Image (cartoon, rainbow, N blue to C red; front, top):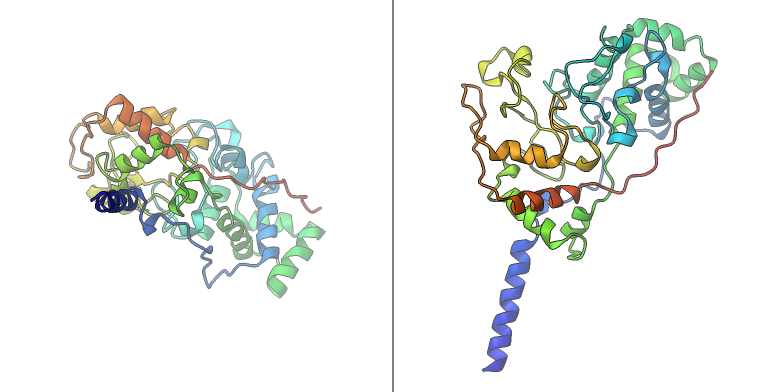
Length: 327
């Protein structure tokens, strides 16, 4: 009789463990996807890193790509809204470039279809780096070091608009969040995250319905939703002119989320607790509001558990050193 009881208890414990474990959908991929039109090479990524940190890609030589995508702040910046040319405040928070290699479109409104187009946007935007690509090409052609590096990477085509964008995009695709405690838990290490965080994951994938939009290993569906955070910026609608996209913004990844405050497309929420409480409250209805926006009844403890889980998504990232720029 005792042996039957022990067998029954053992089976029950095994079943509980299986239920508690995340699915394979949350496992980290084993490689970075690079497009056939712009394959990876180490020299190309190194060149892209130089360009990413080079102020010569801005008209007044006072901004770089890293000005808004700072590795110290989760590859965003720590201000609610980005600051551009002539110290002007922009309308939106800088989105992270972490795990951009897995993105389907870019910018909060998805107006760029690939990372090459994304790299071009801020360089030529009058309110950001405020310079044309032909002017950048002319500047870089005067730099002997860049002449040599572009020939090494791109051969006879050398320094060109497209090659500049290809190099930057290649570097950006190498920015991948490091292994996080959550990843170790997915692989079977039960001690990798706390019991509070485990309960937070259950809420995330269940009662709180966060997984409706924050799916997969990168915790984003790469889609656009009106979640009731904007009443002036029309978001994706400006690009598509489709009423369903009014006030809709791209679902951000949650990787390294604890490094990336403030939150939302406009940086209007300073901490994760505030973000979660936004989903708890009832959002005023409007035609474009996502049907997924249904208030979740969460206690203070459950909100605390969700935050504990979200913090397990921050990885152990490699130190980024500044490149030596060619002259």
